[in-house]
Length: 286
Image (cartoon, rainbow, N blue to C red; front, side, top):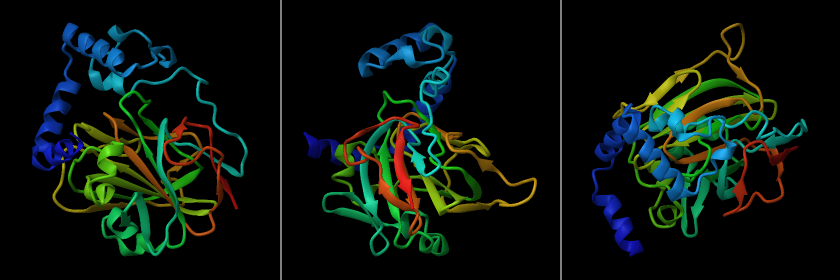
């Protein structure tokens, strides 16, 4: 059955299906929308007591429900200046050193930082000898993405690609998954060097947004696009640790890259399959 699921992903028109689902998720369909939200809550056992608005009827669209805010103070941000915070609720897929420019995807699978960053050679070189972490967001998770450390935005890259599912089964069976899927790369300058936050699209992910650019995709493109941003002066955008930086409309994955000598050790519990909660300790700085 697993092999059938993987084979279907190569066959299905993933972009068409995803954009169709995106239109439905953005529709204000009244009772139909509410019924769909209630089904989703039951199917994925979502704890609505954590939501700022806990009643399904308060959400006019499925997208509004999916990107729901949490109650204030529910995810306190670790305040130790030498400790980075988890950027999302999810589960660790892989983490560790970037060796010879390669990132571990799953057993017997890896891919290069160069491919992940859309072929941007100078960007990839900045992470040689550094560290990475990949976190998978399941459908039940909170889908806003936050800053693990204070950083100033220096570049954003849109990379076109496939829309395979990014669940653990697919990660274990589709070579180069995260470097094949459509994605948005945001690079920040931090006190410990460069940090890349790579927001990876997936099947039926209707949209990837950032707080500075709004919706980056859709529409999907056919070539790599880059935007450079000032890191000094009044136009520089600096986001504090714990600040929201983006959102997924329907679930996906975040891949984080850090430069050499940025991370001393990952925090306790940061290892494959372990649950993450936004704001908790993620890694200790050197």
